[in-house]
Image 1 (tube, helix red, strand yellow):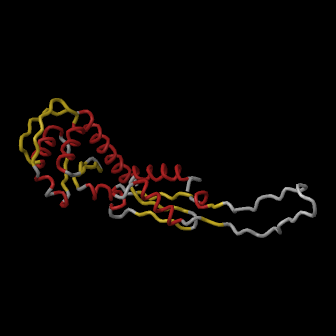
Image 2 (image 1 turned 90 degrees about the horizontal axis):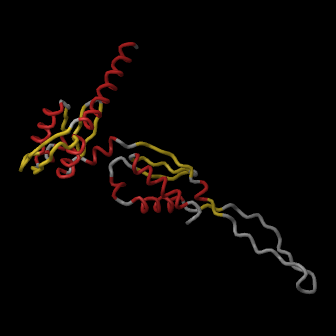
Image 3 (image 1 turned 90 degrees about the vertical axis):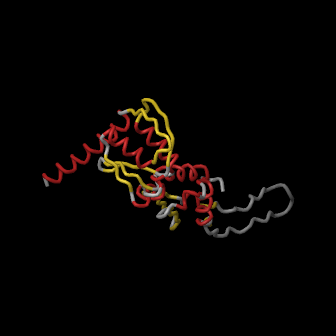
Length: 207
């Protein structure tokens, strides 16, 4: 047990050091038609960060870039490289991992469950009240009938949420959105989960 705790503390320390290095260190570079792989090697030598390139991103890091920067934070430099190369990067256990945007998104998928019963509730259409005493004779009062509670189509709500959050996010492998028994189950990144919550807030009572 003690060994496991020490190992966990070591991983946390490595992760904190990695994140700190990205914001603490600055780089001055003059890359001209340099492969991204060589650029990353330069960043590694200058910062001491450990890099791992996923097999799916091998082709992406062969692209060449031209950048001339002076004393720019390492995190920003990596962001520029990622934009030009079309790759994504994440940090895990103190190691900077270069991968494809799709694989990076898959690694960050989380599941959230939203109560949508209020969204699905459709109030019954009660008949207008009878106004007494306006005409001679006995007023006719409609018989009270049992009105079944109606619900809106949950699949329609799913389609609306998809539309409001955009079609592209749902192309990520492993992502999903389903509705069942008054619950909306969404598996996606934290950013898309925030968009889903915003969409549900706008749709409450509006469809």
